[in-house]
Amino acid sequence: MNRVMQSVSGLLVLGISAAAIALATAQDNTPGKPFEPRQGQPGKDVIWVPTPEATVQKMLDVAKATPDDYAIDLGSGDGRMIIAAAKRGIRGHGVEYNPDMVEYARKKAAEAGVSDKATFIQGDMYEADISKATVLPLFLLSENLERLVPNFLKLKPGTRIVINGYQIYGWQPDLTTQAEGDCGYWCTVHLYIVPAQIGGAWRIGEQTLTVKQEYQKISGTLGNQPIENGVIRGDEVSFSIGRTEYSGRIAGGEISGRTKGARSDAWSARKG
Ligand SMILES: C[S@@+](CC[C@H](N)C(=O)[O-])C[C@H]1O[C@@H](n2cnc3c(N)ncnc32)[C@H](O)[C@@H]1O
Image 1: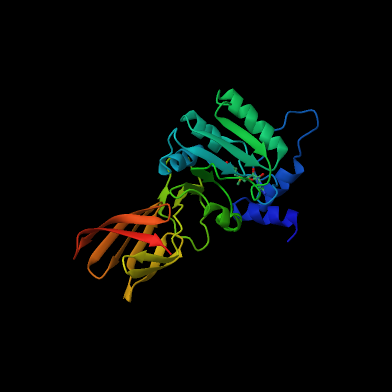
Image 2: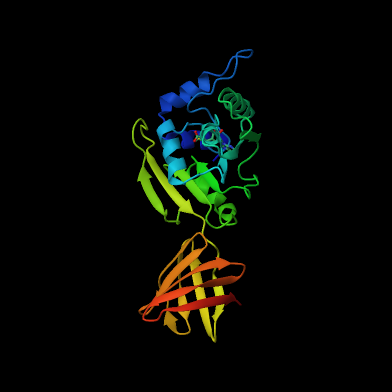
């Protein structure tokens, strides 16, 4: 599919009619006039549709974003996610391919008096360094998100990815909820918490813990006993083996915690 078609199909997927596509494409900004974004205007990999304000606020609430966080929006459009975060005292930046949108977002941040906290970079979201992010409020198509998954999984465990509307293929959200009020078609918010990566072999005393991981879900064995109900939330893991429940924290190639149920004990596992 060529780029124009990609934009058009993105537009249709984003719930914009073919008539609106034609309008957004036809009403090009006149030279000399200040740039004004138009809903449905083409973008490199997805068109611009803004997240309704009520949904932006819900996304930041769901992420439990605080001034200790650093927010990055990939495909930041007019900057509203990062500007709303900055108004809550959260530093962050947006990455946007369209240079006019970048300038526009900078102007909006200045008008809101948050240019010190909210900055915008012109660039391709697939190339962006997102390693600083602890919160990613996003509005992208599932196909865009799928390409970004390898980058998401490298983020610090516990980083929250909150998405307007779309889900990441194959990765079940940790939470799905609805914004209230004036959010139109775009009220659903999905939360994904980046899990620590613990797939592979671990030693618990003399036994081998073998872990198979699929996003935040784990299965596997301890010796020859199967792991059940295995879940990772950020850097915390829990699973059960028979009637014993294991919970622990993952840090620096070690998991340590306690068991409860049939046995109540401290336990630890080492990678390898
Ligand atoms: C659906 S809009 C979301 C805007 C904003 N995040 C919001 O929620 O209001 C997607 C944005 O991604 C931008 N975009 C498309 N492809 C991109 C790419 N490869 N890199 C960076 N930005 C891109 C578009 O120009 C558009 O502004």
